Image (cartoon, rainbow, N blue to C red; front, side, top):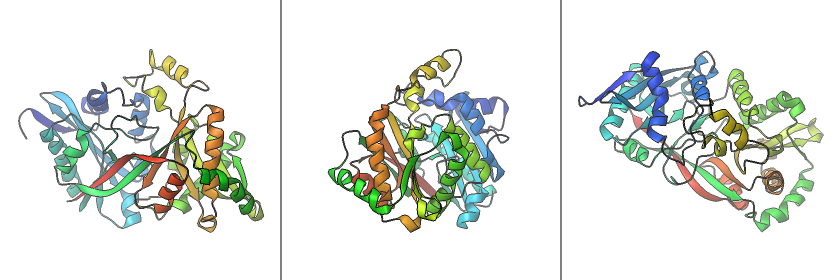
Length: 378
């Protein structure tokens, strides 16, 4: 490492403040990037507030060029992941850097040292900080803004990672869908499927938010348990995530398919969120005060957000292959424009999830973005 670059651990104090500042330094002038709110970033890394840290440990590092913060990364020891998958894997996350190969190499060297110190034999990421939050490196479509709970990075990130010997672990796809893109096949079949399945389809009920939320959690645990990298959320993590989503959700974008013949058992659900990034992109520094909060309130007023992200769709195994997902996709198409939502993103979807990819294509969506997970033996 040359004398112009230094990497220090950032547990607290000035290094920690610099760690938090790096994304705004690196990407602050990019109009496509949606700056995260600083208050949310502080909570994300707060071990007292984020239940992820009940089973995980994080070491944060910040890199300086001639004394100025210019990059950051985190080494993550997720005991829940390693126990679930019987691995000895160190995760990396929260990677941000200027376009400087030497600086990137220095950051990853710090993470590799941390991983070896924990006795691990593999490095994989980025997880920010877990599989249940945002993850991946964008490898294309750099002119397109990120949707809610999806990351964004400049084009040089994949190059800097790959030159250090990382290879693809898996790709995650995102699909764009517009209000006029519904395939004729979906329109023809949805109503017939609705009658044939004999399920009741409804929206989430805000008056029984937590009761409905726990139903979603039960299906989520069953539907995703065999997915690549899946780690069951603890109840504390689930409640933390649900509380965060409750701040931005629109119940009209959440669909339930219930089975009356089995005590209204939830057979499947589809959860879409208004893309609050349409508002966050105007708050360039990520600060709510003094001007950020009025902008946020104005840009998130009723009818002001036009894009949604279909974040999760899950159908219990007993009900798969019946077209339950097609009915919920159809409802998104029909209802979305009524509420002012004219475009959406479906994802992420694992590149190995052929049924979900076919379902997205059936609804008229087209693949637009690819996020990549990288790994490297230690």
